[in-house]
Length: 127
Image (tube, rainbow, N blue to C red; front, side):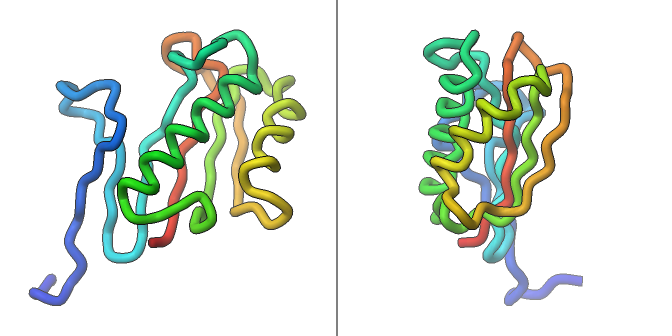
């Protein structure tokens, strides 16, 4: 049961590649938590290079987080989806550069991704 002091859902969209899709919400905040939908690399500058793809996805995540009142420093949990698990080391080079020596909790799995994306990432952050 909710009351007037209960947190409300807030919806955010700094970069929605599918503005007319009823099944895609880029970001939802509930209280002090921000949940970002998966960002994929299908439109990265070089969609064949995992480093370019990872950087592109993380840039998009950062933009959404800022729009929702959060930041990369406030990310608590990351889920990474790799088309090819052999991209693990190259992904980590970019990842460490964004999150530093104390990164958030992370799960990484190999997965089939839409539009030939090499990587997809979703996050949960505090704000």
